[in-house]
Amino acid sequence: MQSSVRLLAAWMVFAAFPLWADRGHEVWAIDQSNSPGQTFGGRIFIYEGNRIQSHPERAAPEIVDLSGAVASLCLAQTGVNPVRPHMLAFNASQTHAIVSFVASGHVAILNAVTRAPITCIRSSVGDNGNRQVHFAFPSPDETYIGVANQNGKLYERIDTNYAASTFVLNPAATVNLKTCVTPNGVACELAGIRNDNAPICPIIDSSSRFNFVTLRGGGLFVIDGKSTPMRIVAEYDRSTVHPNGCLGAESMGKMYVDSGGGTASNLFEADLYAFPLSGFSTAPNPVNTPLPRVVFSEDVDGADSHGATLVHHKRFLWVADRGRNFLWVVETETDRIVTRIPLAGSISQDPTPDLLSASPENTRVYMSLRGPNPLTADPHVSTGSTPGVGVIKVKQGGRDGDFEGIARISNIDAAGVERADVHALAVRIK
Image (cartoon, rainbow, N blue to C red):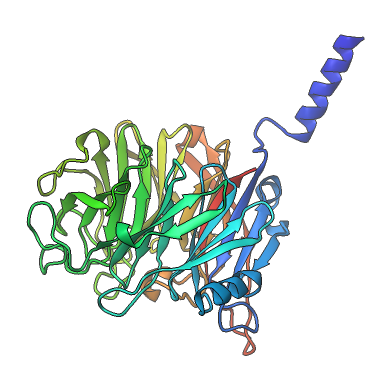
């Protein structure tokens, strides 16, 4: 009898959660257009993982209007409303959400369970009088957040204690990427070497020390994020690492970083580099050392490599080309392209995939899909026809996938124009 009960219980679990299902996760996506009726804000759309997997077109999200409690807290703590929520990340424990506002320079930190804002920090003003936060990236050891202050041309650090809910911008840690000199005696920003040192995306390695910071005008810095002030330990010029990189993924002892298009001075770009992590230490490296492997380079009209995610125990890296509407699938052991997944078709004629994130059990990959009136990046590469969250079913152990559907997001203005522009995307494990 006991055996029969155990078998029945096992069958009931299987019936509720088939072997292909992912359990206990949420998909967070941000429409960076203004909240309806507001001149600031934006909205977070939160989908239960199993619901968006099974029927994305019918998945009903929980919505957090950033023009509400988050904006009120930012106004109270900084004196300025937050504008254009552009990127999103979770700490390693999945307890806190970190939202970057690219137009106003805010970093808002939310309780990921209750969705309530905890604090709001505004980035510093650079020597040029500007400030923005393109992406605030948490360290895996949860001791700090690396902040890419894009137009301020500063790389900043927020010191963090998630358990105590204390988050402090540390001015003593800042690296001024416009005025600094590298350990090799080269001006950090210098025509022909690194033309425009606006930091785009920081990617922090698993040791929580090395911050790979991509630059708008090309080149890259590897920065020791744990020293105060933070220190450049490796430098790359624009001929070695091309402009506008914004992805990072660590696998097989390598850090993958891309270059992309989307700016008026560099419309089209698609490169992927693999940096050997064993080549870095806290001692400064010579220029362009260690040299990255170029996995692919397709600098042709329409190309724009952007978001990426690791799939199937990090054996495969999926990289989005938002300009040409497909995904590369790269085998991380060999750095070989094994296939390309086409996206344009019956589900969407122009999906424009931006950022990617895999489900916990790697049965699905989620994509943020841009809208017809994009607020960031050049319209040549970022204009899409179906704003929302795209869902791809993973096949062949991560070697391929099928585009299954879209959880559509809409924001129609008073003139009847679709303003939704979905950019930020992240998966939270519950």
